[in-house]
Length: 145
Image 1 (cartoon, rainbow, N blue to C red):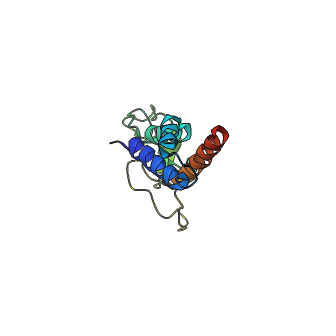
Image 2: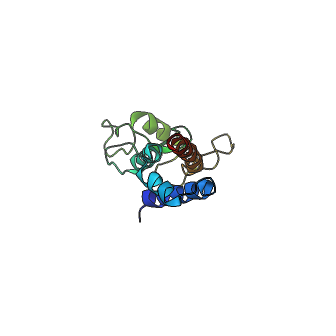
Image 3: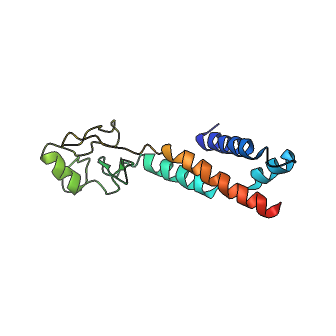
């Protein structure tokens, strides 16, 4: 079972638990849930997959990317032989500090000023997605009921 299947099962379970006391026909409710598209969840999963792809031509530095800390999207510099970084991040390396580290290393917990970095680990948004999907499903069911 992949992550998307697990999340779909969790969402289905949560929706059924939330709505089971409001509807007499659980079989019909289950059928309606099974036929609903879940584009928001798919979008988040696709973005997560995109951010973790290994692409050899890309810079190896981590960028902020709205607190997600993803891999830099720029190509590696062609001006320096065997460089693993784009021009901007290569300049940081020449100064001795790669501000957010490499994408393939643990995320730093403190910035260069010693302040805590509040990374968004992605899965924190899933609870919001589940709640949003429950509201949408409830509206859909109420409109067809």
